[in-house]
Length: 198
Image 1 (spheres, one colour):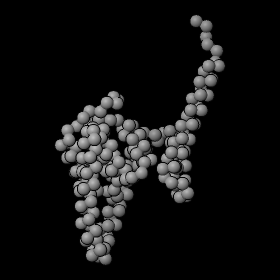
Image 2 (image 1 turned 45 degrees about the vertical axis):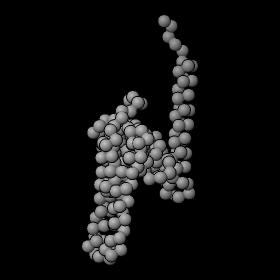
Image 3 (image 1 turned 180 degrees about the vertical axis):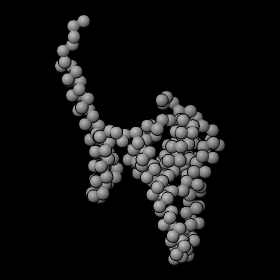
């Protein structure tokens, strides 16, 4: 895909990200999945593989992933102004909603009906997260290296001894090293094989 990205009108970016900030329920991964639908499936501005690669790079950086994605797409398709619009659109509506929710939460948290409602919402959020994880993993599910490194990363993360960013960087470096050694060995074998006379 061409590295030069098309420019989107600032008004369109504002519509996308302010709507996302106001209606992006389900947590950061739900917002990420909505961004995939908008920029990959609907507008076809980048491939699914590139979207996943951007996710990996942003996940290794500090800060909330949904906000990072918004700023990235805002800058990519609208320059500096687009990044500012995306940042404000993602933050302002969500901040207003959270502020309003915090006012009423204390008075509602003791109600049995409210507890049932919150529990059902947790189930829905888990479903959204599961869908996002499957979507992210689907292109690599048949690759044994993906399964090995994913399980290894999950185990290390569960121990809590290494920060998340270091796990991502270290596992990425290990995979890169393994692929480099593999490719070098293949090159050596190919060089050593006798060629048929023409």
